[in-house]
Image 1 (cartoon, rainbow, N blue to C red):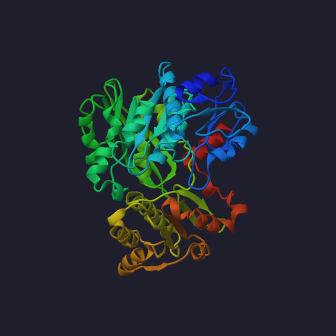
Image 2 (cartoon, rainbow, N blue to C red):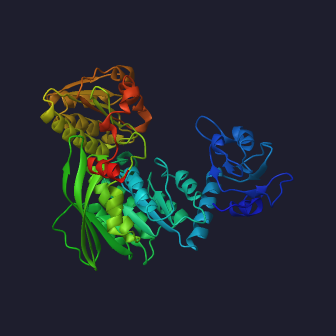
Image 3 (spheres, helix red, strand yellow):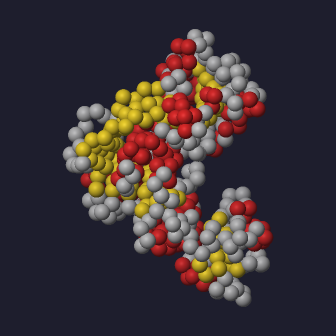
Length: 499
């Protein structure tokens, strides 16, 4: 945010300056909720948590340079204290004020939602926009009532684009998040079965996700997945300009911006090449793209991000060039690392739901098939944990994981968590080796050279511990393995020529 006075800050958050605080004290530009991250001049928002209370750390924030703290009770921090009724509400008010001010200066807000792929697509879109102008985007999955406004406070005088990732825990949640940042462009990736336990049906999820397009201005953009019927139907909920993204060769443009990803093919590590086709009133452009990200689902994510970037004015050729040099930004999301002995570990342990599990197993299947062609003895393994928040669907959805693992050509499946027995039973019935195990047992899995293993579960199981343990033996040499280069082969060759 812009550096401002303590008086302005207290007014925006509807708070009260405590004790003998100087209302002219300059505060900003940083806003933090972790006292360890406080910087000189920053604002520390003291939030209560499940394990710790931010009010216990206001002095630490002050010691680290915080010029003001937002609190619900006095803490004698030694810096300017502003008392508010509710810390989350105060953070929301501050984020709303920062974005509203920046909007008058030309800021464009791009909001993203979907049942799966939000964070990966956000990371891609951020890189496409950064190549054009100053961009603020969340780190990781900051997509809730704290993450959205906290990210918004990072907008500064020079920021041209704000990318806002939005999750939904119930009806009205996305609408409320939109009220904070007022999107100029809304991107909907897909509607799947994540959070069925909270919404009750896929139709209810679609209604909630569609809130992201409801308040778009007529001058804004709705960027929608033409290959998902629930998402495509959202076009009827907005008067904004329309952009489609698709993997369909035959879809008519019908006056909309149309972005296609065609002729996708993968290398032996599941990294895809495709042709980016952009159709507008001005004509059609085609550009080759080679992604460093793994999995067929990343092709759709790249097409979605491309459509959004092009809608706000980034040239298609520049979009394609940036897609060819993408970095993997968010940890533990289809993160591929190759050990010195050649064994590959795919760390997708950040989160899991039925749709992302299906996509991950599909990617594993392709990588495994490619490896077996060059190394007939290569094994394909999967370590999977519980998918949380599925309610009454939990047993069925976990049985499907076991069955899909068999369909994906998995040789051995290890399952962790309360639903492990259902995963194992279905996998065994489908004819593959499967067993329940602990985190410690999975961490000691014996990988042979050229084996490939997927590690995936909901965040609550923290299975990144398993992936880290499997890689630890060769950590020192792994960085030197050329297969760990996150760029595509074509991009690596170009980079060498540039040097």
